[in-house]
Amino acid sequence: MLIGVALLPYLLANLGVGRLGVLTLVWAFIGYFSIFDFGLGRALTYTVSSLKVQGQMDRAVGSIKAGMLLLVLIGCLGATAISAVVVTFGIGWLNVNPKIDEETYRSILIASAAIPLTTITSGLKGALEGFERFKAANILRTTLGISNFAIPAVTVAIYGPDLTLIVLGLLLARLAVMLMHFAVLERILRPLRSGHVFSRKESRDLAKFGAWMSVSNVLSPLMVVSDRFVISHFVGGSSVAYYSVPLDCLFRLLIIPGALTATLFPAFAQRLISPESGRIELQRLYGRALRVIAMLMLPVTLGIAVLSHAGLNLWLGKAFADNAYVVVIIIAFGIFFNGMAQVPHTMIQASGDVKKTSLVHVGEIVVYMPAMVYLVINFGIVGAALAWQLRVMADFFVLHALATRKLRHAVI
Image 1 (tube, rainbow, N blue to C red):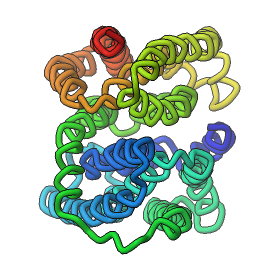
Image 2: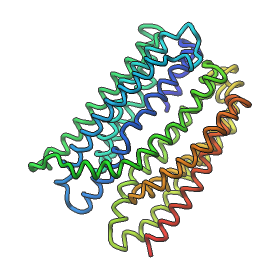
Image 3: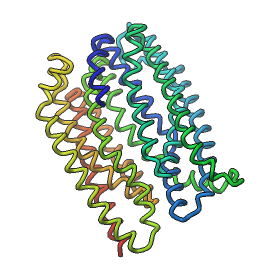
Image 4: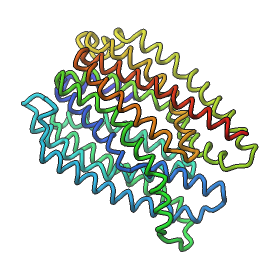
């Protein structure tokens, strides 16, 4: 986040609003298509952490092999499908500046090649978190996050504002981070190998767990990134930057609840299969997690809302601040609820009941998508921010109600 804050003014000055808008679309594109892991990353975390508490770590090797094979196949199929769509239909619907049409087209095609790398990395990260190797997982995640901003800045400094080279650099960074994940996991698995081979049953178990989770993995990111493409179509590609730059930066605040819930997922899963004492502790852990996130997020988001115009003016200039400060105010309050929602979402999924969170997201998207399009057409980027804020608020209250009910049953 800090690297992004430092480098975005440089990128804006050298790329211009149009190219920066396309770059933010590429960031969203690559991030969104982590959906092609079909829930298997989180399924591996659940499986490995459950086997750990049951003392059956030798089975983890077979489960990870099964999961990674599925992820390689799914990622390659996803990349092929997206490339075919782009080649067939082009990128005219993005309504970008005609001067950068070719750059945008090549950039989206290159970004589609990152889909297998993203899905494989998701599985490797899920396995690391199942082993509770959070330090390694978060160092690698931070490395990838820094590269999202550092590589475009370095590329611009050396080669100029060429989106094709920037996206190629982002692709190579994802390849490097994937290989680093593999190297760390290899060291963990080496002592566990005892002839355990690939098992069709383990593959089916992972696919079953990931099936409903994949619904959430498809719909939730879609609701996060679709607004940018709707803005690009109805308002214009240049307006995307005024919306997505503050949104992407404020999203980095979710590292706070994200760091906590990454460790809570295996902790919740283990307590849910533990004796009664573990289940009673589950309720205490859930309440404490909500309080901690609220105490950390509320002052930060309030401060950002109050200082939105002054901060943007200092950071990206008066013209950018005038166009984006209302968006920042609205999104800041939404970020608070989005961070809080991660706790009930994690608890429900750690119970193995991923169907509930998936059905919540199905209900949300049915209401959110038409509402968001209506608000964008009538109120532009402010309407997009308002639609997103209302959705994440509803998401928190619904998930919290479901989690509270599950906790009540768990401790009886």
